[in-house]
Image (cartoon, rainbow, N blue to C red):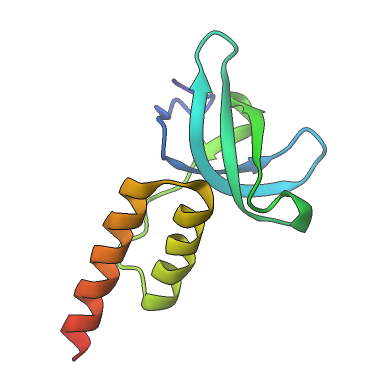
Length: 108
């Protein structure tokens, strides 16, 4: 799906945007509807703490893709592992756990 920034959005992409109520949102795309031009975003960070961990619908015009971070530190990986657990994403959990274990082995 393409948004105003002419960026192709897909499931699992990290996005940032502003909700229809003016709240700042950072999260990842859980699912999308091409017909409604909407995405469902799992909120990882927001200035409205009640939204964190919830999935909210947003128009593709309300979000923009975030560049993928290069190396994540152990703290970031642990946060993302918690997020994967809370969203029930087993594949992402396994991927992040392997990355964290690899990072820990490199340190030792």
